[in-house]
Amino acid sequence: MPELPEVETIARGVDARVRGDCIVQVWFGSHREPFKTPPRQQAKGLEGCVLLAVHRTGKHIVCELGAASPDRERTGKASASPTAQWIVHLGMTGRLLVTTPEAPVAAHTHARLSLSSGRELRFVDPRRFGRLEFRDLGRNAPFTAPGAEPLTIELEEFAALFRGRRLAIKAALLNQSLLAGVGNIYADESLFRAGIRPRRMAGRLTRAELERLRTALRQVLKDAIRLGGSSVSDYVDADGVRGFFQLEHCVYMRTGLPCRHCGTPIRRILLAGRGTHYCPRCQT
Ligand SMILES: [Zn+2]
Picture 1 (tube, protein in one colour):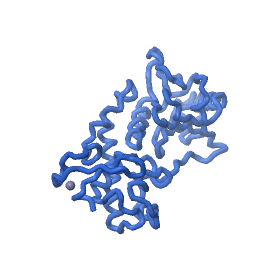
Picture 2: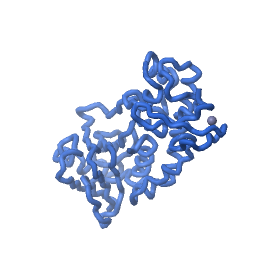
Picture 3: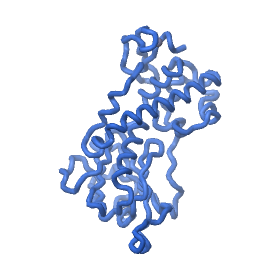
Picture 4: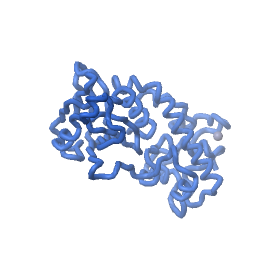
């Protein structure tokens, strides 16, 4: 399942390829599941819009859309402020691809947006847990994701998330309504870097530990985004998220292997139903 760094990488890759493009024509598949907004309404809203920017909010990819006004035809510029948003949630298996129109259409393609540059933006999702939403900003507030943004959260807010919580810190990190986009890998790796055992009760962490955890989490996510960056073009043009699995993990899936810091074998436990990896010496 794509987590924050993967969604960020995809959003950046798509942004680099479609920014400034105009949506000329929209084709949607017949499966209903991906459409949070009815497909007809979505198509009507999307056609003629300019893609002003594509970015990540939480685990969602948000396409900021501008109305293609007569101004644009005259000046060649789109209005600066978005009038609508197209929100793509990848779910378990969703992919957002930028292709040429001639590229073979993959099975489970649910959306094809023809762009004025001649390219196509496609949404492919075999398991159909992904969602597409059209949001008219004239009638709705801009999209916000549930959960705080781990890359920019301030220490006060971060500490407040866990205050009084009687559950393991690992489980709290995975709770998407607290923090957006932190998955199993990044939870384990950030707890290792912060020197905190995953079973520790969230509400009992000291201020210093929370500060270390916030720093470690940001660093792990940034490292992952940086490594994912190398697979951006592969990903959007073809089919890989491979760059992500070459991450230099310290504990994740390293059960029994020596800790990179102290040599103690890495332990694996089950916590909140998830395989959880830690160093019994470095993490207290
Ligand atoms: Zn260690």
